[in-house]
Length: 83
Image 1 (cartoon, rainbow, N blue to C red):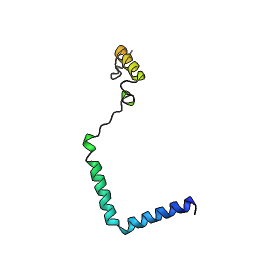
Image 2: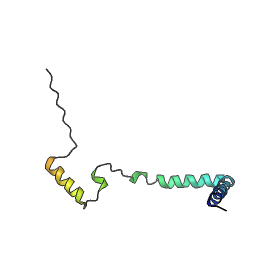
Image 3: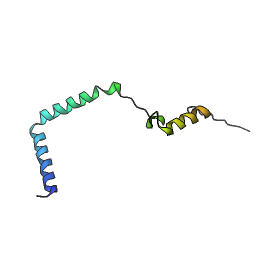
Image 4: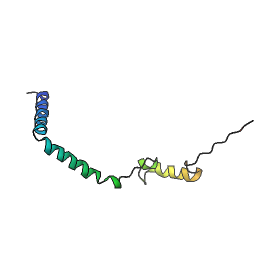
């Protein structure tokens, strides 16, 4: 037997198990989703540039020095001169 045949037999066995125990599988999936959903309030998302680096990383330290010297990039000023 080659690996492809063994893999296909494994998927076939798994699908038979799911089909024969469909109510138990649905309950288990709902239980798993519910358990994971309890952690949603504590989920935090950091999309800042600094979030990708450790606080002690030399690149981040240099970046913090740069930001302190030249200011933060949170503000944008647009000037329009008309005739």
